[in-house]
Image (cartoon, rainbow, N blue to C red; front, side, top):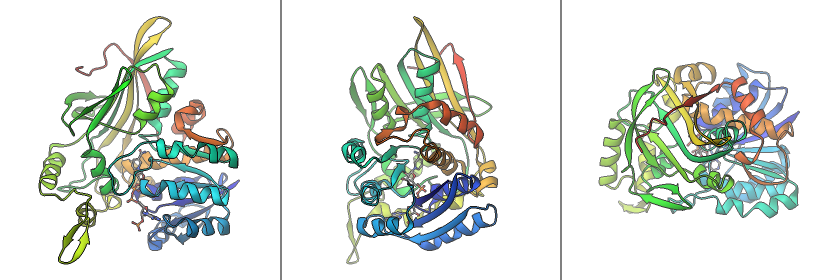
Amino acid sequence: MSKVMIIGAGGVGGVVAHKCAQLSHIFTEIVLASRTKNKCDDIAQQIKAKAQTHINTAQVDADNVKELTALLQKEKPSLVINVALPYQDLHIMDACLAANVHYLDTANYEPIDEAKFEYSWQWAYQEKFQQAGLMALLGSGFDPGVTNVYTAYLRKHYLDEIHELDIIDCNAGDHGQPFATNFNPEINIREVTAKGRYWQDGAWIETDPLSVTQGYTFPEGIGDQNIYLMYHEELESLTKHFPEIKRARFWMTFSDNYLKHLEVLQNIGMTGIEPVNHNGTEIVPLQFLKTLLPDPKTLGPLTEGKTCIGCIAKGIKEGKEKIFYIYNICDHQACYKEVNSQAISYTTGVPAMIGAKMMIEKTWLQAGVFNIEQCNPDPFMEDLNAYGLPWKVIELTDTGLHS
Ligand code: NDP
């Protein structure tokens, strides 16, 4: 039915390409384009051995709007799935507008020289996309992405109003490496070392990085883990689109080992994003650290254990207070077996494919810039069950959180 261009051939790009290729009746042709073409070729090679879909590769610098526009005009995809880095979002949106192509991403724009992410830059494209009759779907990964859809689904079917929302991202997997991040190290470390922030009664409350923590007991054998309060981008769009939410927080698990290494790296300046002069050459410490750390793609065969990502929503249904927990459990080794990747890239890449499917099948297609929770959650939730990320909703009597 449609040709798509996937931009980015990292951990997530590989999963998106595999999953799109599995649905060759929908994604009839795939172009996998990235800065380093041989990474695209490696992924295409794996896919050709498994699926029928026609897959081509291309080299592109997505920050060069002219170059990307020319590639889009040559290839004529109906949709771009942007799984490069958040720094490229606006450039890719500009090229999509110039070449008349729909747009989807999994992470909101972040300027390269400032560790700050917010939706304002992308929301500002609303009129341009509306006028062009094109859709930009923002945040179609897991978090943001599935967590937004989970919230919309609970609000639609289980609660008349949501008052408290806690999004909890648990990775109970172990890759056996002294220190590694499970998605792009630069983006991951910028996010984790930023100040925490949560929504309370109409205002943002800021906290020192990783200073708010508590234990949480996860379901289905995962058990006790420490969770840390962080700022995450879906809090911004969810509190905008569900204004009745009084408190919204995001939590993530980290092992003691990860935190110990991170503390040392921060103390010695290795996580800095300002260039420093090293023997006459300007280097950005965090980018140099990324060069040294294991490529997240190589963690696939090494990682064992499970992830559990979900939302706890407290609110009212027909006048009575209710609490629901909705979550997915994903097994690192099962993901590797299916698409040569660990569960973090898998849980991001599958929803990116499903969001693209929703657009191509015209289930969600409309002109303008949309966060994923603005679309009907039901068909997306069905597809999560069908394509590898089954979910459960359980009713709780207590959130299980201390405060
Ligand atoms: P990787 O670093 O593994 O891959 C990024 C890819 O983008 C690389 O192939 C890289 O090319 C390519 N790239 C970078 N700059 C450019 C450019 N200027 N032009 C073209 N290609 C470029 O990252 P991940 O796969 O781990 O993450 C991809 C995205 O997914 C990120 O935006 C991340 O924030 C997001 N994400 C979202 C999650 C969610 O749940 N919503 C969870 C995890 C990740 P090269 O190989 O040359 O470096």
